[in-house]
Image 1 (cartoon, rainbow, N blue to C red):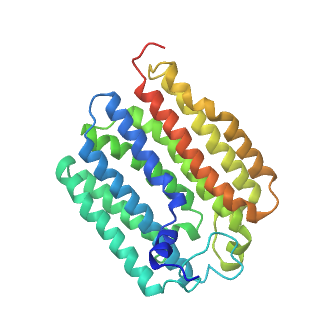
Image 2 (cartoon, rainbow, N blue to C red):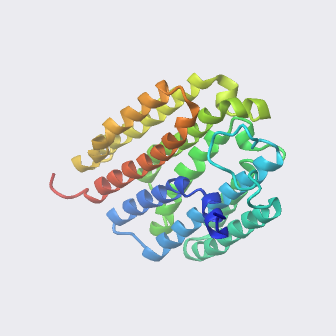
Amino acid sequence: MKESKSALWIEAARPQTLAAAVVPVLVGASLAYQNELLNWTNTSVALICAMLIQIGTNFANDYFDFVKGSDTDERIGFRRATAAGLISPEQMKSATILTMGLAFIFGLYLVWAAGWIVLAIGVLSLIFGVLYTGGPFPLGYNGLGDVFVFLFFGIVAVMTTYYVNALEWSEASFWASLAIGGLCVNILVVNNLRDVDQDRKSGKRTLGVLFGEVTLKFEYLLMVVLAFAIPPHFYVQLGFNIWIMLPYLSLPVAGYYVYKIWTEQDKKNLNPMLERTAKYMVIFGILFSIGILMNGMNA
């Protein structure tokens, strides 16, 4: 049975990765709401922009990985539409430009609402979204993909969401962004662990290729530890009540996923682990956001 074009585009957008766009906005908005500074319109537009940038980055990855020859028949990851011949390179390139263009257009509202600093942040996010796999020095091909994800889908996303609501920066949003950035990086870690053999052959120098698979496993563990270090900081240093520790309800799941990352031998089984890692980010983000919103209530 022939797949519909819309289904192919939805698959190419990689909805399993959209947690990286949604959770940072959720946490940043929760902090704004807790401070009675939430602007629903600005938050909604920020969410639209974040999702468009994530999808645009995915489209760009699909296109540039095909052009650079990184996606081959040996690929064990999720199907790539361009490499599979389902969507032409020209169409994927056009989709990247359209999606990033829409993100820019929606972002202009936030520039109007929150100032020119948002324009600078937005333009940099768009540029680096393309440079992740495109350009003369693609970040993902030179061991810098993890840094990009941590900065832009963690620190920048959470802090800027808070800023477009409150029109001021927040120390709490910075600390919260470290937890979210770490969990977002782990989505990439699973991806790189799964693809390390193919990446090595294609000349894609991820951290796994440069330093070995054990490094990626330690990175996954470290990012989980970082995430769980943040709620106690909120409790002890920022004066939040005990509800902020809600993410610890998910600790057994995180521990199990760390165990699987360290012990899984069949790389094909890392595809569902990637999806589970993204879903775990959502679970942590929801629990963390509830803990933020419950601050001020009697515990």
